[in-house]
Amino acid sequence: MGIRKMFILMMVVLLVVALAGCGGTNDPNNNDDSEALTTDVLVIGGGAAGLAAAIEAVEAGASVILLEKLPALGGSTVISGGIMYAAESPVQERAGVEENWQDLAAYWIEMAEGDVDEDLINYIAENSGETIAWLEGLGVEFSENLSAQGISPALRGHVSAANGGLGLIGPTGDVASEKGVEIMLNTAATSLIIDEDGRVTGAEAEGENGELFTITAGSVVLATGGFDKSVEMLEEYAPVAAGHISYVSPGNVGDGLRMAVEAGADVVAKNGVIGFRGVAADYPYSRPLGGLVFMPSLYVDEDGNRFMNEANHYAIMYEKMVETGGDDFYSIFDKNSPVVGTLEDSLDTGYVSKADSFEDLAEAIGVPVDAFMATVDRFNELAAAGNDEDFGNAAIAPLEDGEVYALSVSPATLGTFGGPRINLAGEVLNTAGEAIQGLYAVGEVANGQLYKTIYPASGTSITMSFTLGRVTGAEAAAAAASLQ
Image (cartoon, rainbow, N blue to C red; front, side, top):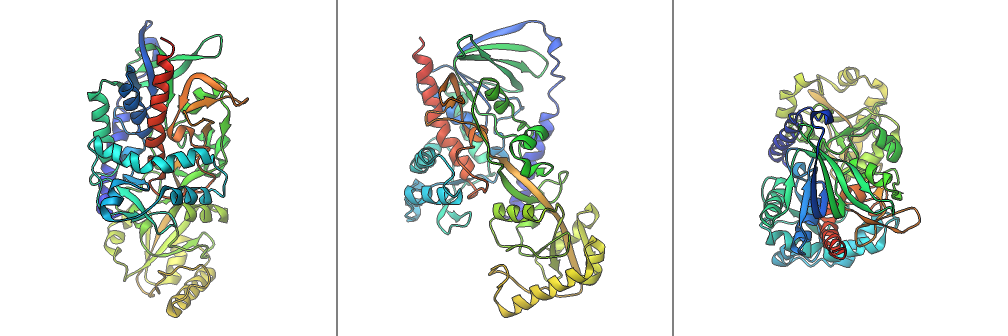
């Protein structure tokens, strides 16, 4: 992903965060009365999964209310790079690329070492190409240039033609509104309404100025995203990422997971996240400086040692960083790097160090000098030989002493794994394996059965969210209709 594109995404990040901070006091005492609303299907969350569910539900004839607690639709999808991972799509067909869904499913299963719900994986893979076609029918435009993602050379990466994730969410949100979905922004669901038989019959919600709503619904769909922004939930469900930087929607605090648990849901969580590497919490990866984590370099840990193949998929690089047990890492560049200009411009941020020699650089960043010098010497030896026999990085290139730079890098997350157990209809299951009547979940809030601990490829989560969102919306509408 180019630095210019990363800058564009930064603008979207900042817009969402800024808007999220201007929504009023949310004091429930501002309004003693609760407005009563009724709908067939209530969707909680306006990202990829929630929008897909809402559109399919209204297409099935249901009335739909969608609650989004932020001032804009999109969740983490809108601040993503807009990639979708799919097979047998119209884009691939136009490009003459033959990719069958069985191979896609096999790849996802292999990356999870078989620890997934294969029925869900197979359904998503088989319908992934049709989801691309569905989105094109809604007005989403994809680039005709497909890309490889993850560790597979297959050309399954479909990229939004403009504005990253906004190119996916913009048209989808417009269609949802045009089709009659009642979208309530700045309105957060606070709790589910559960009757004496354990059936979910709606939700309580609160508006930006403290106005209260009681929404009765035939079906409720949780599509609230992950829990990266919740310290408590990370410690409980993904302690591997506790304390790590998070580059997700500010709304991802685990609301849906909490409500599902309160309704008696069985939870699937394996201590995994969409791992990434970032610069700092107050300097989002979408800014130009953060984009440098994608550039070829030498990576060392806080002991000055090299510890991984720097050309690996970012999710695997995250795993390697975590395995060291440390939190501080450095990406090393020399004066011949094509990004020297960005490094020079960023010296005052506190995240870039510059020195006149490798020895001085080691002292500047506080790593053991002897270990660091031995690491650089070994790195250059392998680069000169054209064979990285230590870590297998085919892109390794020697570093020249002189003006050298270090970029401070830390483990980061782009999403979480874990949530209520669901079936193929999107119904939330309790600990006995029975469906909780009236309750559905889809997207990142309910992805524990789709991964183990390593994210398989960019675009996987968005494809899974749109694809399962569609079937969940249709099933929720059918269930609501059966009550009438």
